Image (cartoon, rainbow, N blue to C red; front, side, top):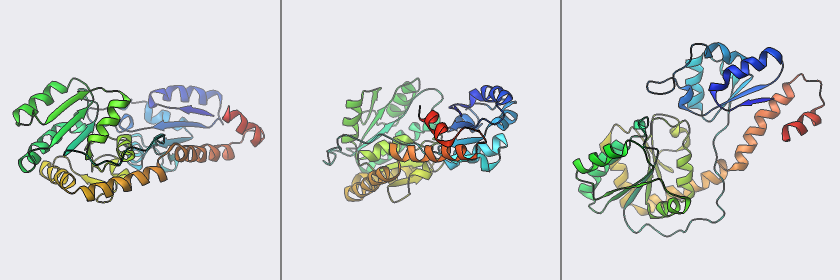
Length: 299
């Protein structure tokens, strides 16, 4: 069996297929690398042909699968779903309540990351501050957009409320989650959204975008809020609700934490992956005994 972890390796899959006609070949797809959207990775003209060499495509979300199906003209029955997961925490986070109304975003701030919508977050924080003067907004992550975002915070009069922490280590990240009352990243380019799982592990409610795959992970009004980030007023209203209603925020964060434990830990990932691989082993016409094939797979 050949497992390919990026679409850039499609030519390799095709080359292998020429010599191994019956070998199961699986491509893993994650998000915008197969969306073929403006400003993202462009589809190569030959790729719609080369995908024919694949036996299965393992997608982290239905959104990504649907986009690839349309853009690459792939038959829907080639797709299987393999949701992302996180490692379980060895020590559960402390249950203490945040000491101040703090919002946290963890995101890359590179030139190609405008669709993370941190600009909209800063604009929403400016609206929240009109009703909640003590609000704080912490941003973890670095990149070339940072000076532009700092200038926007200054222009909107919230430079004293917005803190850019840059890239941090694991300890600093845990401390930032502990300080936060809500995690918000209304990104339009999430093929899944592992950061929401990480926030839930710390018991935090989340806010995500209605565009992209995050809405498959976050249940609106249950463990977070799903909204259109271009509606800055609605974004500000939801932030204000979570910051001023701690019982609601705590309940949402707890429901998110339980969701991670039930659906998105490493054991769940292994279960879904085994299911995909076992299906291919059963369908394979290899003359090897099944036990021998499994031993090779495990090795």
